[in-house]
Length: 476
Image (cartoon, rainbow, N blue to C red):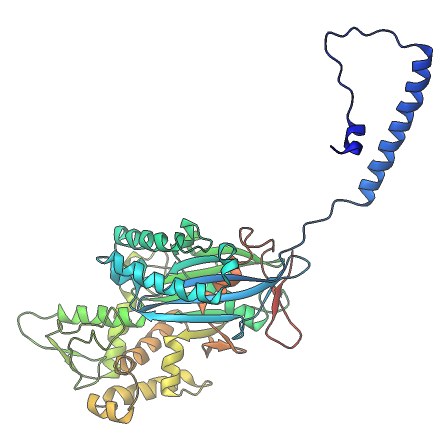
């Protein structure tokens, strides 16, 4: 027993013990003692105020986080390594020593009737993440699964069954996981990573840049807008650093390149009766609609053998007309005077600067577009491409994946039509900014690493490091 502790204990008298008046000697002893005790307490209180209890130190060493991107045509796991500085602020970079990824074919949305198969796929991704994270850090390293448009397009019950199957694997992984960390997400994160890389996120002196994404299943538009007609569903109020942003972000389902091609083919197939053939203007002449399941990754285009009535015609002008019709479908349900795509109001893009990524970028790269005159250049080169015979294109672009080659006639016309509807902004086609990939998963990491459940950091706003790729979050 510690004698010093015993000296601080007050004597406790039994309740039944009678109290007697203190003698004069006792009074002389008690009064000075009380005064001394009060002085001691006052001194201790003063010292405590001058020297408050120390704030717990932030975690030392490296921390880890993993995000599974469950896309429509495949899945990829991203593993991030970062640290917390002495102020409790996350510091990270996306160089090869601190960021790794691994992908597998087949989107999880295709496993509605094979949940065990879905678990196997998720386990593959989990195994990669665990191999990159020290075992002692597994329980402190979060893992999240974020599914995109491919999962959003399937039936609700199928989607939940797949997510629940994934949750089983993630709970058993030994990594930190919560049920709500496996979900279907919408756009925004690509905007976060783009403006982080540009140095404008959380910087009130630098205007932000919008993002246009053309994926396989959906298209996304995200930019800062003060338009009052925007639906509250598409409006996000976010603060990075001390800078508030009102962000318009909408995902257009079934408007991604592959999904839109399938919609057009379905529409053409149903437009005739009997065995009458119908021309498909968005596919080069001579192309055969057969089963491509062993060749194509896209769940939309894997088996084209059902399109027995289609005849590839390769006509850019007619293709553009058909793609405009696709984008205008459900315009009659528009809640305002104008809806660029479908029945959703979208603010005009004109006057804003944008980065166009994913299939926007791949199409511009394939056609080697003049960045300054991309609009007229795409029309000209798209028209020339669509006119050529399929066998001629296969020889001319030997080595190009046939799945992608078959889509460039469509995408050239579709992109022109999409910008006609949205407005033609100042746009740069890119998949990277200052060596940082414009991958939404990186933006998701930036957003999630600032949450209290992950680290003591505030919401993020980046500042540049000393000549390397490091970034840190600014506090409020």
